[in-house]
Image 1: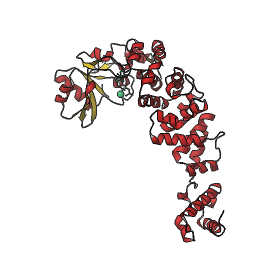
Image 2: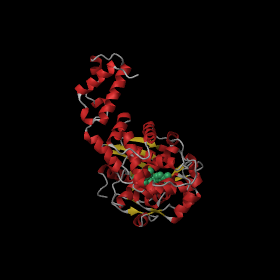
Image 3: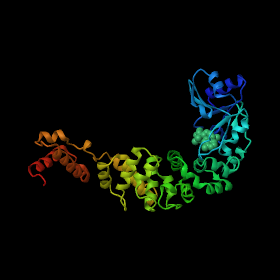
Image 4: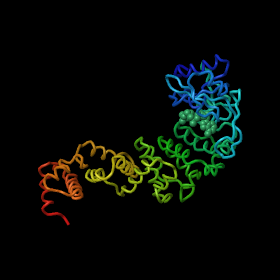
Length: 400
Ligand code: ATP
Ligand code: MG
């Protein structure tokens, strides 16, 4: 409990002194047990949302329908959720209604996995009715209760199982995995935003090989042309730079190669990715050539035409195909070399060309590009005098 921030402890203490039960729950308890740093702190309490709001000066009803009130304190905000049980899940994702409860174990029983169904009291006692600690020790992701029922209620839990498995390096329990296969068709109804968020978290781990299990189970069938088919090299994605766009691009590349998608932008749009990611990935996939660029000049040429993130993706695709990080290394050396690959670092600019007699913006643009191509091929010739001379010759003998 020593690593729980004081403002979180203070919230629990205040609720307790008002006569309510209040505990830490969910991911933060799991992470504390595993000696990992929790990403957020969730408090569950027997107090109703109104009672919580009455206890604290600054609150915000962030998810009042589900019993969640955000308590704001000087040190940060904490979500405080009333103990609850969930009603039916007729949409396969969210409970139709929830009812507030006063019993902690009832609240823990609605949670997805045993490791996420532990609570911790202020003095450090762990409440663990579903043996989450035992499963954490055995590195196992296991549903609370009957996995088929739990996945039928909410199919996003299938993706969450794979996500926790890849993030934590846990195996998925046999029955839980079998239930994922039985309920796989339920994923068709999930929102793309939620699927995408889980997929991105998996892509950002070193265990991207698990994505092939997701493909084999058909969890992404609605986006793909060939159902249930794994792709080659998916584990290599986990060794690429820790950059979400690069890894999404690599995943698209593998799907494209195996004929599972035809249009990367359409696939990424279906997954509801943001426009910047879609644009960078699509440009990189168009610019990737097999065999890939492997000379400094080729990288500089690419850098002169596309943004650095696009070129980084292209280098990553080459690394993906060949293993290792040689292409990214080569690109880094080109960037570090300080050699010119953009008109911004060319020794002459548009104003210089105006001064020597150019009077047409289009021609100035073409000439700068011509000079840039020359300097990319001859890095030691980025010299104002020599370049102005070349430009003047072009002025006298314009290229048709
Ligand atoms: P992270 O470290 O990624 O935040 P987390 O376990 O805290 O992981 P959250 O999505 O923040 O995950 O959810 C907090 C808690 O709410 C979970 O630990 C779990 O107890 C419960 N929970 C979240 N999503 C579901 C779900 N779909 N079904 C059942 N319980 C869920
Ligand atoms: Mg969390």
